[in-house]
Amino acid sequence: MKRLLAVFVFLVSLSFAARLHAQDKKLIPITRYPAKIKDTITQIRQDTAEQKDLNDVLKSVFTKNYKPVKTDTVGRKPIVSFVPAAGYSLQSEAAVTVSGNIVFRSSPGSKISAITTSMGFTQRRQFTLPIVSNIWTADNGYLFTGDTRFYVYPQSTYGLGSNSNIANEQPMRYDLLRVSEVVLKRIAGNFFLGAGYKLEKHWDISSLSPLDGAASDYYAYGTADRTASSGLSLNMLFDSRDNSVNASKGFYGAIQYYNYIQFLGSNSNWQSIVIDLRKYYRFPANSKNVIAFWSYDWLVLGGRPPYLDLPSTSWDTYSTTGRGYIQSRFRGAQMVYAEAEYRFRITRNGLIGGVVFLNGESFSAAPGSKLETVQPGYGPGLRIKLSKVSDTNLDIDYGFGRQGSNGLFLTVGEVF
Image 1 (cartoon, rainbow, N blue to C red):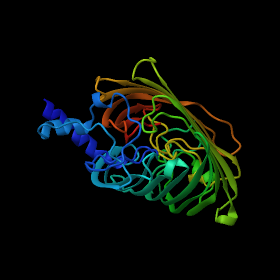
Image 2: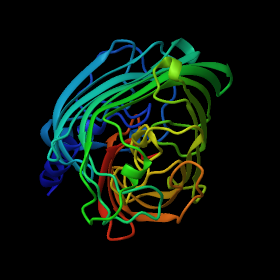
Image 3: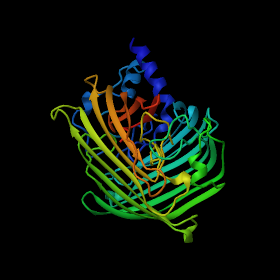
């Protein structure tokens, strides 16, 4: 039985290794780390020695006299990992990827820096190549974040506003290039200020009429075969979480203001703001269980963005909003989103855990319109510990929404 469980967990983890880039913290390779690295993490959870993760399970089955690792082996020497993988999501259906990352510390006391990429081909004939980086300088004085991606992306739109009907599906296809770079400087304690540049470019845009024959919000908004949004950002960050991989307490707050300018190559001048707030509590206070709250507001402040650059479900940086709905299900000039999740242990050693979640999202339609109906999403989830040192989990969630929307959602590391 133990061997069967180990093989099952190994296959599941391998199939979703490509999703190792969700948030600055979720870039931990699941391949074996080098045994001899001098630099070790300065703070280790008190109960690490009592916990088990996927590596412990596999090695206890296949390695004689295996002793669990109790220290963090991520040091200044880069750890390079590449792995083929397979997975599934609502927006891609089946997918095959080659995923790789480089993980290191700039100094013994700095947070983990990582560069990751994942080239994927999907059942929907999509091609994706993201490169995500989070580089901490020595003693965490500066944080450099990058998000560069190239997509060949057949994907449907469903109209504007959260009152749109899922039957009003309109197939689309486009190529996407995103380039985003931000530099943040620590001002005091956990507070950072910074600035950056962002480019969102779509080309070879094509579409069919809505499948149900209804009027098309995309056609009414204004079509184009290529669009560009190019501009500067101002960024604020406060992060007091005890562990950015899997927080059990603390607060995270980020405000990102974007000003897209024709002088820099934009189709039009327009402005937006993203407000990302998260809070974590132990509940009950003396347990390992956590209740977490998330607010994500993405608002167009002025101007008229290209249709594909409007706020939309699961188009946040890490594609995690709106479990229960396919990516791009809702779109509009204003997005207000909130989520609560309860995370609990199933086994005392932390190997298996579970979650229940509830979210709600409301969108306006075109710029100047009001927010519409709040659309809920909810469901259960399973957690399998990939790394007890970093507290990284494999997430397997099943989400439900309105109008028959439901599906499997898979990632590595907590959703928020």
